[in-house]
Image (cartoon, rainbow, N blue to C red; front, side):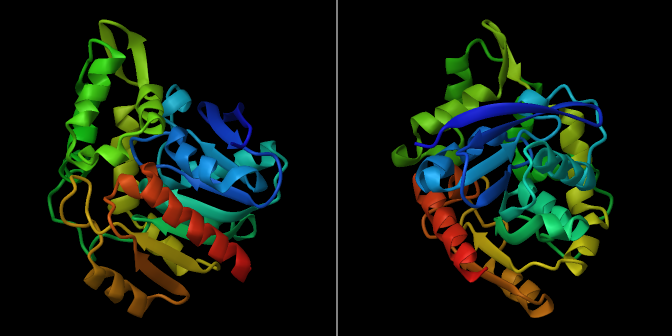
Length: 297
């Protein structure tokens, strides 16, 4: 298992925390989902071993970066990850891996800072879900309709860490016994603040709402996609956030492929939107794609 350390850097609005696995080899910059944290990449880090350096921030408003006061939005996150690369004296990321919201951050980072990101690996995120969002829907309503329980938990209190794990055990995405691992429990525990009998998620709800607007309802993503200079590989989860219909049906990906240059995709069998990154089977597919992208550079 590669050596792991945490770092803290000053960014606009506060202190950004990040995890770093390994100290040599190609740089893999990882960007997590909208209510997630950097521990979501622990299984991937364990798989790729010591021959890579994996760098993953807690994005502002999440994890140990939850005290940052703003600003929010994809461009703020992109500026953070470049500041993180600078702080670690890393010229660029050979591959930037983004899961869910992190894929949108990855797209904006490559478009805004093309010299800092080599290849892009978008994991079930980063592309417009539809050509138009439903009219009259607020950012909070939109994110609630998409992520459901993950949003609801931000207003909940839990008697203990075990009670919090029980909440997630009931989530439709984690009903396969092989997907429930020690690494997954580490990821959930890292999200908790407070102490029994009053534990809660550290995630800043205001950040979630503002980031949802930035990634799904503003011009940030369409403009960034038009300005990409790196090849894009997309991994699709055939099941969605609630282990239901996919966020990106294959018909949608075919439609986007016809419009975009230097874009390819494939579906990862047997995973949903969460387990494509958090379970070993999903992490194995991500690892395989990282290695393939590096060979093509």
